Image 1 (cartoon, rainbow, N blue to C red):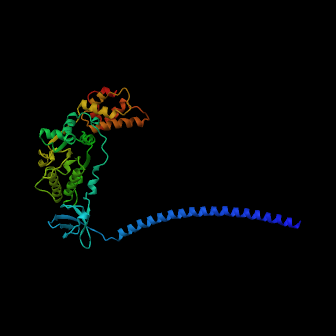
Image 2 (image 1 turned 180 degrees about the horizontal axis):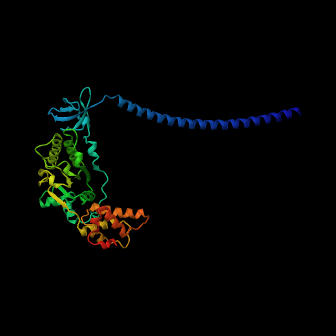
Image 3 (image 1 turned 180 degrees about the vertical axis):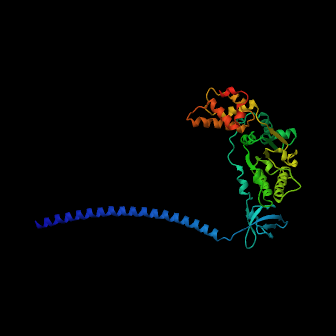
Length: 402
């Protein structure tokens, strides 16, 4: 009897040991899986840190490199060497490896020289003044010919002078003539000169470079002429392009025998402009449009044929043109049925296109001031009186004022 009891107890102990071993096996397997996952994470982290080390090492190697000297190629020699002028002033005869440069160098190219050996190690991109790059209008203007009222003749002239040579140059080749090189827009302020230039840039999809005449007047000698050269260089590089020079009279006034040092610097800039307009270098698909309010003070050398071949006058709009301009500026406005644009055109003699746009804006402001959403005839009447003055606004027929 004691033997059977001892045997049963042993069997029970063996079963308990088996269960304990199974649980330990499961725990160990789970531990193994956890360690494998941790190993994978550590391997990925090691790869990431290795990449970061390589990037930092490359950056450190760049920082350890000696600085390079900027230079300009003056001339090339028959034996493969080049004459360069460094940014510090002296000129050197140096060698250059064709494998680095990628071909022959040309005079005027910008290169980088090793500081110790002065060997050419790289070719630098052509330098364009950031001030000149900022003149480029990156986004195409939104103005179209439909936004211009009363200038049908001027639109036709500028389209055949600027737009056709850019879009259909084959027509001029077939006829056997060269397209006009430049267009000068003359007229009173607010008559649509700048607006028409923006519309041309939009229709031609060309690079539009807008230059203010006063921006070419610089403090230091030669800076204005350099800006003119870089503007035309950038225009040729981004051709087809249009250079629009606004307020041309600021830099192109008539030259006088008696002049101060500042006037002489303006004259240097003007002479550079004359050279670029009608020089030896071909301009390619680059068209020039200039605008001025004072054509009477421009230098005769600028207005002769060959530089500005076409001079377009912008008169003040007549009654029919004023009505058309009012329709353009009121097409998005919520106006009342009592508004008669033809009568408003009669009551605004002598108004320019800019004045008429201001009249529409002021009429809308009168409406907003009274918390209304419809512009009435009285709002336009008050805006005419405000923009043009009581005398001009009332005109001959006072019945419009009620």
